[in-house]
Image 1 (tube, rainbow, N blue to C red):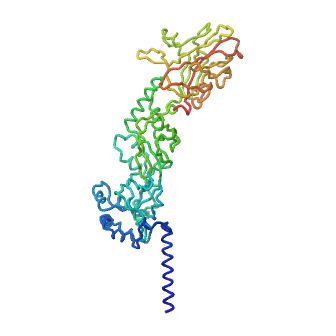
Image 2 (cartoon, helix red, strand yellow):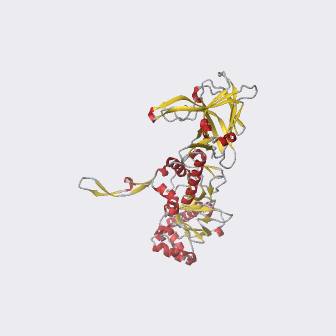
Image 3 (cartoon, one colour):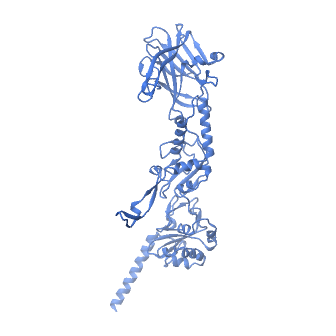
Length: 529
């Protein structure tokens, strides 16, 4: 009898301890018992005990999922009533896949369902949790209507509709129509199917003694190294342009190249497209497009939200966000490496335009002059430098100067050569120049009447002698940028011409007032977008 009392007392203590552990596990200690249900049944038996969940249970049993709810593990179940279950049959999705999306490991009571939480479901997809307003909890697009139904091995939350698993960005991109074939096919062209030895099962040996596997394969893609848009664990963003948007972008590029006198080559096209591919992937979730002006892609490319046209209504993916791009611009500093022209092109300007494009101040002589020879056999280039040489009147206080609207050469169909005005996109540039530097006077340089450099010493051969310095063709002193004059800003919103003024500031080592001008070049800075 004493032993029996002892055993009964022990069972009572254990029962009290179990209740305390129960409450502690679910965070219910001291809570309002009217706010939740507590059942001693396991999850499956509890769902069976509620008539309005009968169709949900039937579906779990039909697709072999029900037994998951009887195991000794803690789960959360997102149940729907019989009326809401009617939507399952009309879904064009794998039914088992959908049902497994309604169960996840671990128990999350209502207090733990914080905004921004992602819960990994039994189908491998993540369920996003949002709390748009107080006392309202959404999982995916469904709303919790009756939560905190606690059972022996987890919790049931009733939701108002079946949840549809989100696609991953990889799946979404793979399923895009041919209207998006350029971005779609470019991404998947880099896919490589690789044998996965660690997940392949040996099933025998061939006649040569080589192991035969029930083989598993994985898809690898260089993009995954920076932003794994296939992984459900990732949280990434992608901007997706259609073929039409890309086409307009490249048409605009062609027009720009035409305006500043540079052919739009296949190599230029490839540079532009590589920028697009590097600029559309982000290793973060962008929820509020436009809140930040500058976004930096997973590959280090700058995306300005004030320039690129994007529909701010994103598509929610299981591993991030997708935005539709409706206007795409390749930044100036990507497709323009340099805009460079020679001063002697003055010679090819039609007579009726010369006074409009060139104004000479206190000039006694204007000479187009061939000067030094050059030869770079390793690139099969040779010839003679040609300069615009100006001589001054030596009038005190009135320096020799030229106001010059830059021009480019045009090769006409009849074989003649003429010159026309150079137009450039607005923005910030580095201005470079070159002269025949030996004994050259110091210069003042202006762009659109704004002083860029005062008393600039261009007499040193490096870097001012012609274009033989700075970013030359590798292995040569050919076709470089010359010396850096300074930073300039071409104002405005449209591609336009500009005015360059060069004037003698000091004679320096020169014995006469003269200028021996060879070239100018504009190189976009990183700020030139």
